[in-house]
Structures are given as structure tokens and as C-alpha cells.
Amino acid sequence: MKKTIAVFLILCLAAALAACGANDLYIHDPASGAEPPAAKDTPAPVLTEPDPVVAEALGGQVILSVKNEMQSFAAPDGSGKTILSFGTDTVKVVLDDRAAAEKINQFLAMKDEMYYTGSGAGDGMNELLELATDNYTLVKELGTSQNTEFSCTRSVIVERGDSRILSLRYRVNSYTGGAHGLYADRVFVFDTATGSLLKLDDIAADRAALEEAMLAKMTDLIENDVRYQPVKEYMKAFQPDLELNDALRSLFREGSWLLDDEGFAVFSDLYEIGSYADGILRFSLSYEELDGILREEYLPFARSESGELFIRSIDSPRSASVILVDKVTTDEKGSEFRVFSQGTVYDVSIDSVVYISDHVGFYQTTTHWYCSYLSNAGVQVQTLIPDGMPDLMIRYLDENGLPHSFLITRSGEDGTVILLEEEHVEAVG
Image (cartoon, rainbow, N blue to C red; front, side):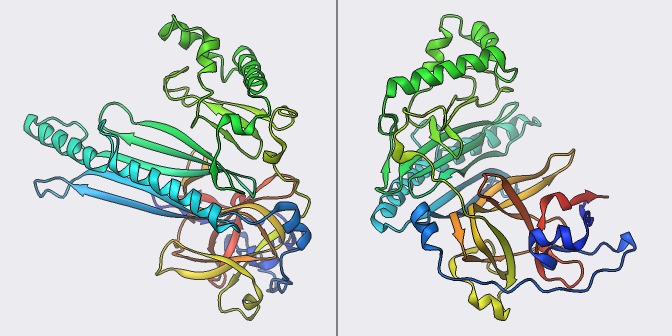
């Protein structure tokens, strides 16, 4: 059923909109019976060069542009039925140090090529297409109702991105028949000052202390946290000859650890220490718990400056004063506008989202762009804006690490592009 938007003004204009960029965030709800307030223009952006104190405290910006590609392949019999969907996110990293950025980009390009070509074990685009074709032909010959559409997609999640660390988690989702698909995560952690791929021994001042601290945390969670308690039952039922401590210690491997905004984490593969329903299990240590264990040069930066995001049409006279760091295009036929910060906001990302009912809300499907921080600067965006439920969101963290998320949509009053807080959107009908 097609979703429509019902937006409710929950606070008076002076309180609710002052914190979100004044009237640019207001959509009048005719059903409320209230008269819309007099239009008040968003304050003129008072933008200067990024604060040198901020630049010194945070280092250079880390910017990621993500190209989302999807290919579909039809059955060989001319029926037009799709038998394989194959997609990936291709990342380009921009750093102040071009040599470091090129080093990271070359590594990621190599991994992209490996994803496409496969390892010869039934993966890679060509091998999956051959497998899907054989499956379709067999199902057609047998006349069964078996699902014949295979898929393999790879998406990227930025776990942490700053002038010290870039943690990229790639998730591959695949379906090649059966009751359900499979998924797996692989993480690459880079030193953004040098472009080098980091290993566990590189980040730990004491590797043994890191492992022991994490093992103690894992054991505590499995014993006392309901989310992890099924691990013991699973290990006893399916891997009775493997000691739990040995199974947990095996998670300390390259590709299965990361540094995020909160601390250090390791994670399992599907079925490794839990059932499919348990999913990929992740265990974390905060940076406070890593004191004296993690090398100081890889600790996150302190965030003290605050800021807000605003939106401005590209042809607005005031828009010309916005310092642009990049342009993001999700559709070349779409509308163009600029999103900018007054002050400093952190971990800014532009993502595609879908609305899921049953109180789930908006779910991120694809990242298009990421920036470690915006300080008195903006990004130009070109995208199609649907008439119904919004499908693009911009997110950031404030100086306290609290998340803020805004949907990019149009005003019900005059059709201008606006930022709308996520909690102000509700599907009805």
C-alpha cells in the first residue's frame, strides 16, 4: 500500500524550529485546523573558513564518495525473468594527504576486482551467473516452483572515519537457493595518516593485554547478558569438542576486528559461535577500557565544537556564500541544493533509506557519502525527491556523540526542499 506522510507540529514554532533551522523545517498540516505561521527565512549563513582551532584539533577531513552499482541478468530463454542480481558499493577516499588516499584507493580497487572475479569457489559475477543459469534450466526442466532468482550484493558501512583511523566494514549478502540467504562481514582498518592497512599488532601497545581484556569481556557477556547466553548452548550442541575460550580467541583475526566511535570490537561469522537467528555476534571494549592497551595515536579526537545543519536551494543568493567540500549525485535528473553546517558537526553521512512499518521506522540501505566533519562548510546534493515517503536521509553526530537524522523532502506549503526530523514523519493509509 502506498505510504503517505502525515507530519505533526509537536511544539510551538519558536521552540521546535529554532533548534532545527527555523522555518526551513516546517511542514504545515492542514488537518490540524491551525493557520500556518508567517514565513520566516532561515538566518543567513555566516560562514568563514573552517575554524583553525577545529582543524588543528580534528586534523584534515576524511571524505568518502560511494558509487552504488547493480546489474541484473535475465534467463537465457528470453522469458525476461531475472535470475541474478549482482551489486556492489565502490568507495573513493579523499584525504589531505593524496599519497595516503591513493594507497587506500588502490587497495580497495583490488578488493573490488576480487569481488567481481571471485576466488573460483562459486563466487564472483561470472561464476554466480553460470550457477544461476544452470539452476534456472534445471528448475524449468523439472517443472518445480523453486525460487530461481539468485543475488549477491556488497555494501559498505563506515565504522569510523577521521584523520587517524578509517574503518570500513563490507557486508556481502548472497542468496543461491535454500530457505534463506547468507551474509558475511569483512573489515579493513587504515591509518589515514599513511594509508597503511593496520593489523592487530599495529594498534595495540600490548597485544596480549588486548586479547585478555576482550576475552574477559566476552566471558562476562556470555554469562550475564541475555543476548549472548545462547552461545554456550550452541557450542555444546554443535561444537562439543571445541572449548569456548578457544572459540572466542579465534575471533582475534584480521578482517574480524575494528575500531569504531565507541572503541574496539571483534565479531564472529554466521554459525561460528551461534545460530543463524543469533546472527553475527559482536563484542566491544570502550576506549576507556582500552586505556594503556591501545596506542594513543589511534584514540579518537575530542569533540568540543557544536553546530547545526541547514539546507539552501542552489539558486538562493545566500547559497553562494557556502564553502563546498564536495558534490553528491544520486540521480543526475534530480533537484540540486546545498546542505551546510553552521559550526561543526561530525560523522556526516548521506544515505538511502526505506520505511519499514511495525514501529521499525527508516532503515538504511545504502551510503552515498561520508565526511568526518563539516565546519562552516557544505555539500552540494543532486537527487530525485519522491512525492510520497522520503528515501534519502542525512545524519550526523553532535559534540556529545548523540545522533541526529533528517529526511530530505519537500515542504507541503511551497514545495521547497527541506530537512525534516525523522520523528516528525509517520506513514498512514
